Image (cartoon, rainbow, N blue to C red; front, side, top):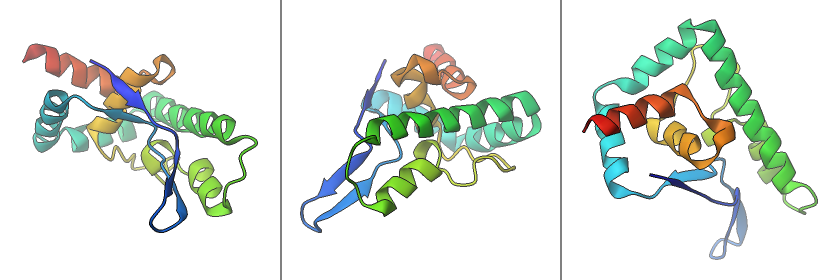
Length: 139
């Protein structure tokens, strides 16, 4: 199982605008995406939102991951001449474009996102991605 990394900025040729992509890792495997969707249907997004919100160390860890992603994007964008709205979106929102990630309650958005980051870059290993992969192995 793996995920793929994409560049955080796309150019829409039709509209002739740059489009920020705050999610750099994506799961391409259809079976894995389907299994993760079933986990989401079982309420695991809410479960993780509550767990991360309640557990101080885990909450701080996820803030750290969001901030690490912003630093990674800043490195990728360094020296690029991009519109301000693109730079602001990519340097002021967390993983997946999550806003206010430093505030409680914690927002998971989706399990796919955290699993893709968990698989895509060892620096982004996280408990949500680990949990999802353990569930997948049980099937």
